[in-house]
Length: 185
Image (cartoon, one colour):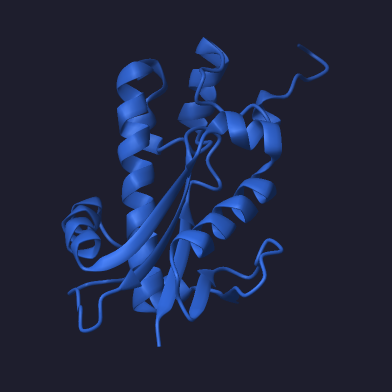
């Protein structure tokens, strides 16, 4: 019975790509330390990335900040999940979380990325891809420190936006109270 595990990285940040990955592990493949990507060090995620790629069928969908702003995060998630189902033929599809975003034939499980190997593998593929992309973007926009906060709305990141304004990889549709004008502005 083939299972396609699916997870995403970059749904919460205010900058950078949203990355959704689907993964069907080859039968018999066992990777030491496979777990929820957020619980692994960057070094461990990077070490697991190639073995997963070499021992699976996988598909990675990368959604730009501009598409997120124009279509909304839910539509982008729905389209990415549909694309993965189209590209990877499996008997079952399991997505980490509690919503299918309206996609039929998709099961969900909260914290599946720490419980099911295929979802753990998808989590690692998505997180490594997301982080590699934002580190690449950090070189183009060094004043924002993307390599440190990975696009999340940290206090430091908000201060950098206040000082430099938005850059092309910021999601303008994501509103932060810290960036809203006040009565005193």
